[in-house]
Length: 297
Image (cartoon, rainbow, N blue to C red):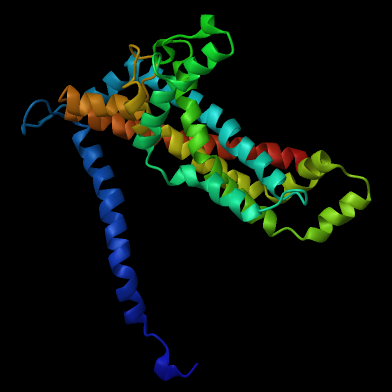
């Protein structure tokens, strides 16, 4: 390409400057602001009073916050198995030579992830409705009316019930990521393995998994990050109830900040969510890396 038509460094910088500035403003400015406010007592008005690390001391002793953290960890565990595990199985099924119309399967699989989380919450709230919900209706139709109940009032099941919509919504998202990784594998590898007598299960475990492990690590990281800040659909379905049985960290921070008008402590909760999310993501990556390294050895 002639030098005359090559883009100059200043032009490239001009194109990149606005997105970078917007990213910094949208991500880092709120984070820094929340960190500053976390050292203040700020309730019911514009007045802020510096109180040092008292908010963090209160956070460490806040049993409701740590209960919410446990609920987020439960969501992470269920969604890693449900979202990524089921997505992996479905991708293997779609890639099978027996399956026709692969493009339609991929499109409809991805569709739920394009729907707003609030809408997903309303849909599943209607499914669980004790009077008009399809779940209780189905149980009545098969003669198991004794199993019908007010599902979202069951403290023992409510976290699993709010996790199911998250699994359902994001399976297609991870299908697309895993499918792109599997598509890059040379098909001759599968053909040779099939000739050697490897069945579908062995090909999945001993060929596909090792070759896409980095992609799966990215999926796990995205899954953890998403579920550590879960809020929308759970708020629509239960608002953290019954009691605090489905309270998650983001919802606890929201209620503290806007319903109880304690913006200082709410900012502290936000910082706590950020730090705990980094620790969980970093810990999971270290654990997976260690397990992979030991297996390679």
